[in-house]
Image 1: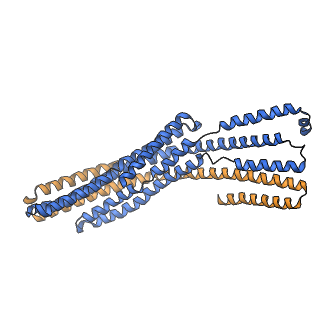
Image 2: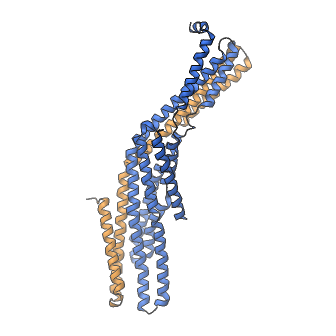
Image 3: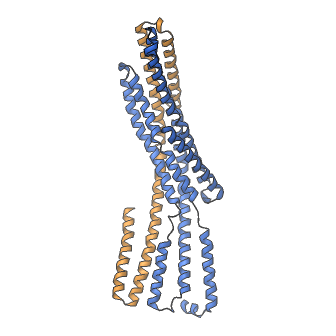
Length: 137
Length: 298
């Protein structure tokens, strides 16, 4: 059965308390203990402290696993916002194209060949900007 | 047909009609949404949620434990340090996703974004140019001006209304997930990062108190004992300094969550004064917390 984050935290705290109590006993009874006993108690303190640390790591892992779906939803929201910004920029490009084609229309009506060529080039460039914007999106 | 009818309309009446349209346009323009408070809050939140130092501190704890443990007890702690390094990467991704979301939301709420004034200006200039080519009588200067003003307002209103509706839609959709992620991250910081520091402090205590007890038993308390006590205090001060960073970060996450919840609750009226005041206050507080966190980190 997988351990819950609450259980991991509770057990982690309990193990830490045990390690602390063992350490306190070892220091207070230093002169009454043999070197071998001290070593054994210290090893046990470290084992218990490692369990405590491992349980904390486990709790963090459980939280991270639980957040996967929600993180994807937030990333989706950011992607949606980026798309909206892209669309707003598209609208601005469309307005530029409209202006370019109005100029082109005027030039065609006037029959001025140089003006037609200049306006046509501007219209093509504006259209190209929209294509580029769409391609980049 | 229409043009003929317009041409028959008395010039004075036409002028009044145009003036009314321009006036209406001006009034409508003033009603455009101001999402400055939303933008500021989003940009401040983006900075507040991304705190790499706290993540590095968490990963570091197990490295310290492995370093202090007796050689025959350090292997498992080294494995744990690798696991925490991976978790640091995952936690960093959580912060990055939140930061990216808030930065993008801030960009979308930026007041300069939907302004198409220069593009509309170009359209008006083009219209004026076209007037010259088809004859001065076909399109009057007043018509050109009015067309430009109206186009400007309609475009802006359309873009602005659409932008606000999109901001509202995104905020509403994201809020439940954002609340869970912010709460989860805050919980990890307050409970697990704090527990990790408790474990590190215990390891430091065990390490130096062993040296101290050994020094005492050998009658070397005044030499080795003093040194051990000093180094223990230094190491524990370091742990405490890292602990001090946790509360401001957790508080900042709480404010980010609260602000986003306010945004979601008021999504229909994002430029409302009450919401703007709340967001401005939260932005200021987030700025203060970021400054405090920076000072603690330095």
